[in-house]
Image 1 (spheres, rainbow, N blue to C red):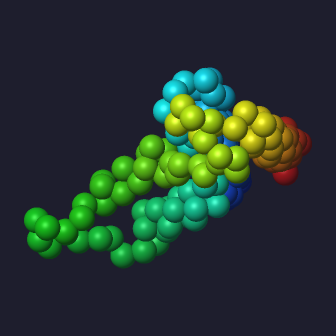
Image 2 (image 1 turned 180 degrees about the vertical axis):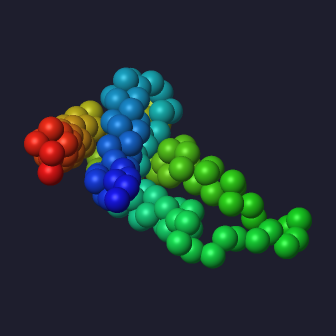
Image 3 (image 1 turned 30 degrees about the vertical axis):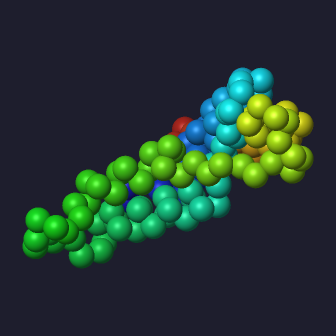
Length: 143
């Protein structure tokens, strides 16, 4: 019986990538807190995860393959562009009015979001480490 990453890790392998991309976006927001005209952005984690699950379903080998019967049809390779974090970025609406320089970064909000994302990233990492540890124990004990 073959063990695949999807069977072993489930959705958690994909959440790690999404949380990493989100951390980069949030860090960019913090780095540009004083840049005039900079617009704060964020990745909607839930929407991105749903999109990833949909793409995995479409690419799953158990489903009928897509046949491109016309030049105007979308190619399955075009779906890879949907994994680009730039496409899933959304601009954040600030809670407080504009400071006059057009910058929408609110440092306290960005720090809170970054910290929350980091904690969730670490929780997922601990879960994956537990899975790997259980697999390693099963392999070494001969089960």
